[in-house]
Image 1: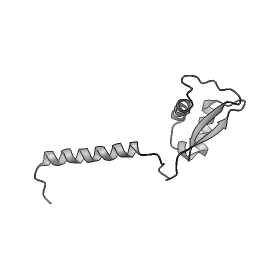
Image 2: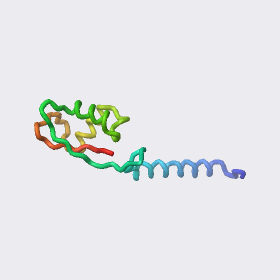
Image 3: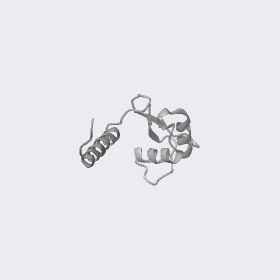
Image 4: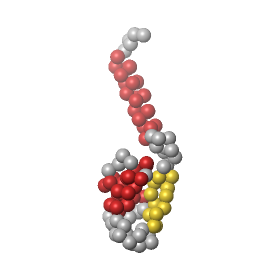
Length: 99
């Protein structure tokens, strides 16, 4: 196969790659392992901090396995509407993502 118009070919190639990248982000609700992302609820115990929860989830939850602890904390805060608040109360319900 011979490419007649290289500029047109390059534009089409970039367009196709862009569409594929967009689709992977827009429709990427499953993990690399093929599991469905779900939510799990934990309740805060005495001594729990966002850092300790994020560290534990990084070790034990496949959803957070390859993420930085600081990014996990940011996601937890966002998911639970905590904003800049890092204070947790005993018995407080926290939602986390899980596989």
